[in-house]
Length: 254
Image (tube, rainbow, N blue to C red):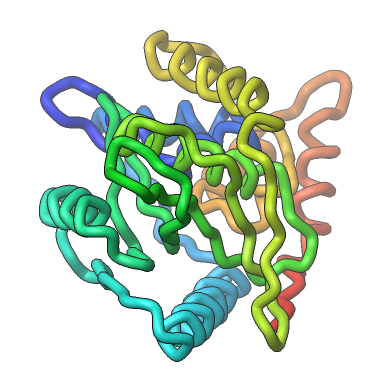
């Protein structure tokens, strides 16, 4: 989530964050406006997960290149530069595009991998489909939501909606899971609309414990709020017990 001249730029992560916790969206908007600063907190498990996730992504990309596919790698390229180079790579028909940049209006996305398929589009006799590398063997709603977002952005750039989107879970041969884009299109549009409405208005939200608390950078602030609360129904105590019981036990599977 970024502010460009008063216009809020939203990305795939903002969609999954909003699905996990509406209050998180409010906190991020407040930070973007300069009204508050996020606490200096990063869950140790999240750092390890990000490192292993990057290793998994790199191993998958290496396997694609080893199979003889041509690659355009945009890792480390600035957002503006990646937008131009992604379109150029798509126009030229590169087999795979790593960390490409996609944009439509105020919406933005950088999928792990875009792979060329032989389905015709506005680009020519080919088009692209999004792939997301994940450590978990169980695909979550947030992953499907992010892939749906990439598919929607691709549809604008190539003049055709991808037929499928893919999750790459850990496996020796990098067997992918295919999901039909149309099967999740209505779900994606509903969550997207909810987020757009949330960012258009100053919605009043309150901190509620969710699974995302285990890895959320705002957790210290919410935890302090729960500790201060002394509600008649004892809800503040319940909040504290929930959060203190979190073990930060994200399962990391190779």
